[in-house]
Image 1 (cartoon, rainbow, N blue to C red):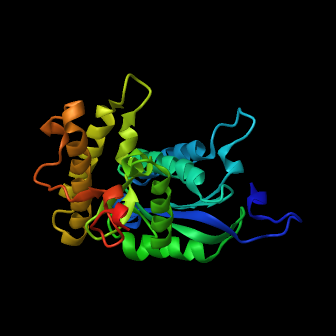
Image 2: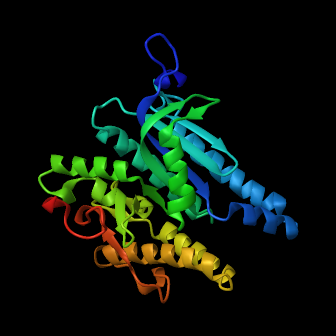
Length: 288
């Protein structure tokens, strides 16, 4: 609701908040290609249905006493989605828990439909209502998406990364923190959303793996690798994402008996656990 970014008198107020900015990698080219192939309606129907379902999910159920939109605001236009989540808990840990979950589910469900997201999550001053988004947090999140994310991944700003690493100190061991499942670190030092973790369903006896969606994710990646095999710049982006896919498979292959059929062929694993990385991309956080 708009009152999230208002003071006690109802006047607009900049507040410390998480700000996520995402878009679909190569969306402009998708539209151009579909138009050239007379497939405009097919792309539109798929995209509209997928994004609309995900926005409804992020807004939360309407048949309860409150919705998620009482905690944060969402603004979408074309393939861009912005989420502003003001901090009320003091340290931002509870807000991060919900934000990371909805972004992970959003990113996974878009990916298995062939819409791979890239973006940034910042922490800083922000103002949002249904018409306006303003503040340094928005600028930083946009710059992360447009200048730093490059590959289809949603990365954290340095300030956001530092804040979340401070949360690890609340736990007897960093590996006990939920952050270590939701986040991974790449060799370039960027921490990013580990959205494939949503394939692990805690609702059954232990954690069950959604093999159907894992295979859909693999097939979508393989299609992109074939589509862009003559465009090395774009191909490398999907090669990097395929490396992440294989990293997830490697992490869980023994427990869930993931066969080689679920791996993307000839792609190496190049990612690290979030809790074991310092801000330069190497070293143990416990030594800081």
